[in-house]
Length: 161
Image (tube, rainbow, N blue to C red; front, top):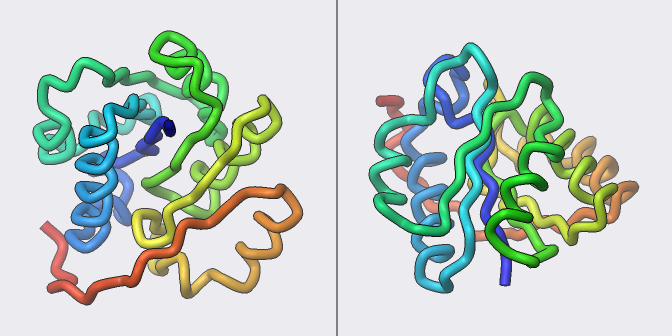
């Protein structure tokens, strides 16, 4: 069992406005619902709400929690919500920005004893994809003992909404 953690998919973050990224996150939402895994949504304070299409995709799913964070590392907020939903200690992270909030949350959750997985095609930072930042990022996660889930990246129309 896993918990899906969706990080900062809010319109004010430019990198969240990408259709290919959204489709990858939809895949992770559908996987979570199919396996009855909890879903935790982290939103950065004062940056608006998570994109409506992501909320709609989750729907009235009973194992969903939303939390607001005030710093890049959302591990405290995620941990609080995860503990309310399950005893699961495995998390899959998706969202933005990979080089800040996603990696900081991953490190924080790892420090709290979670097994952390980052889904490569469901994360992005302004201006680049996971595979474009791979060399530096892989060293960071190797040092932190964080797993990367690799999916074949399908090429979609890359227009933003």
